[in-house]
Amino acid sequence: MSKSITEALVHILGRENVLTGSREIISRYFRNRVNRTGIIAVTPKNVKAVQRIVSFAIKTRIPIYTLGGMWSPEEIASNKGILLDLSKMNRIYEIDPVNLHAIIGPGVTFSQFQEKVKKYEPPVKIAFPVCADSPFILCNYMNRNITLNAPTLRGRTIIVSNYHVVLPDSGDIFKSGSHSISEQDHVPDWPGTGGTAPSLAFYGTDDALGIPVKGVVWLFPVQEHREVILFRFPDHESVNAFLFEHCRAGRFVEAYGANQTFLSALLAKNESEMKELRKEIPEWIVAGTLEGSEELVTVIKEILITSAKKFNGQIFSHELLCSTFDKPWYVWDRNKYKGHSEIISFYCLFSRFEQLKKVLTGELEHLGYSNSEVGQLVLPLKQARSLYAEFDLYFEDKEEGKNIYIRAYKKVIDAGAFVDRPAGSIAEYVYSKNPEIWKLQREVKRQLDPHNILNPHQFIARRGGS
Image (tube, rainbow, N blue to C red; front, side):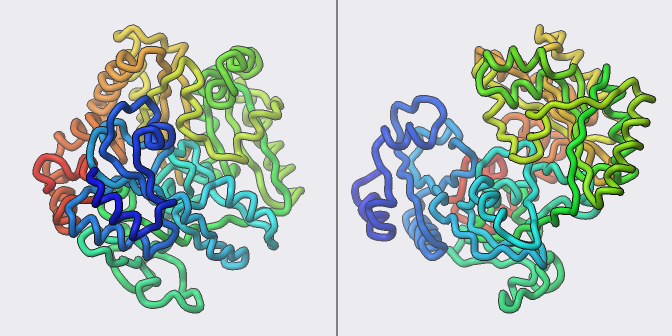
């Protein structure tokens, strides 16, 4: 990047908020070593600064890459452009425990918010995702990460009710829902209650259409009594049947089913500790939370214990497993095992899961990957109307892992698995099955980002996206 571009950004943001030189970029923003880069990283502190950066990018036609996850995609490392790091915009504008919402900036992390919310009365909590690909709350929620509260979310699973987005065509701010009319006196913080209609337009786009800079996120009340309960089961069929019965009945507030490999890889601090955990954790478990009055929790617990026996299951205790409901599960935590992981995830009906699992595990065996090394997670959604399934693959050789991952993923997609946020070659494969959706996405991108400056590497911007 030219010196004049760097100095212009310094003038906009101040020198302390502009990082140049490969050493800083490599250490902070890319997981693997990057030898050469034309990227300048910037760390704006407020919304006005983001708007000025976008205006500058429009004028100079310099692309902007947003840092959503822990690391930037390696494919952009050799490009010229501005890497937008919003971690300094970590203001918690408000926590409202009465009306169950919080207003936060894009740099607010789960750990920061969890520490802050402990001080509020009446007590409230935030929904933690099981597959967070970013430490930032707003990023995860805007990109539709699955949450541990899924069994009790009987309507919408999107838990950002209103948000503010900087648009890439002008640097102006789009405000969704009731915030487009007024932010005073907290008009109902629900999407669609007034104002602009396209309130869902920016969900799940991974910042390809705009840069979220503020959001209203839902909070959840902490009940009088809460208890985490664990059951061991002999197989995944029993796990699924048990989860379906009791999530459908509304007995769990949060719940998941997982195997020993998944949990030990997720929870261990290193590979050595993982080996020890595999000796402690049962082959298959169901974990869930019960909430309400102490009397109600006691009754539900007895129902669950009796029911588990029908599926050859039994209650057990494990302190570390109980803690899984108190913090987000970051996708990079799985890399501790063998050094690299690939995640195959999809949605389906409970009735389709066994068939899809058979297709996937059959293909993995064909490719030489042992199914005993597959981490498995099942998360019921909306009172078991459907489920989110995850299959984690662990590799020492990254390239070999990528090849197996892509081939197996395509096989299960062909069998009818639904993928809502495909990326890279998997996105290309999914969209090739319905070119009209791809065409519509590119047209939306052209309208909102006519100069193709915002995250131009994103899939919806490729092949005619400019």
